[in-house]
Length: 230
View 1 (spheres, rainbow, N blue to C red):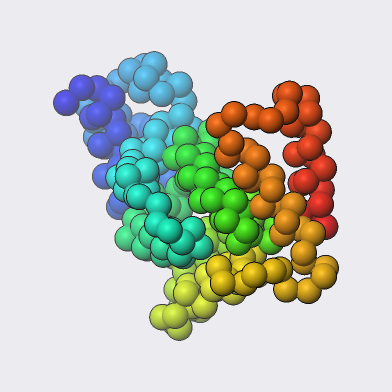
View 2 (cartoon, rainbow, N blue to C red; view 1 turned 90 degrees about the vertical axis):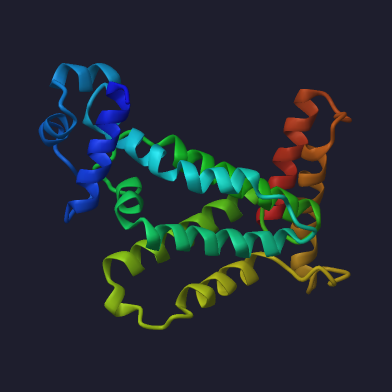
């Protein structure tokens, strides 16, 4: 095991025993049997170390999401993704709290990748005519709700005794952003234009051979995003 792995292993073990989502660099160095200069050379500073610990802890979770094969129902994939997110958070509370700790000043690559993977599923939802808001906005709403629910259940479990709480919140959030696959037309005249705009924008982004110049595509996407957000 090289010095980097020793430091990450030591930090991970200390984090698992800590009452808060934080560890000291001195304790990590002592546990890993390395000097502080080595830690700072490899990770830059404490924030860099903690971000690396988060990325290491989330790798297995992200690997499973990368390997997941899309189903024929992108909304079902959203529900499955929500459940997997909650399961990981509850099974790895220390890593999860650290990822979303205000003390973590360096954004972990794992958080950015999770956001991108969710956005990819929502692009599929929009292309299928199932999304009622732009994919970027839906990504923010779902991720915020999913993370908020997970952190609430981790920090105040006594306030969430209902075992179906996560599923109830999941369905409420997703039902507000998507529509059934068997719906021929968006429900209500006020919803028709936003859904059509979000669908067209996603399908144009998915095209292998763009129909417009880069400038034209940017302008059209700006118009469609505005229409889908109304």
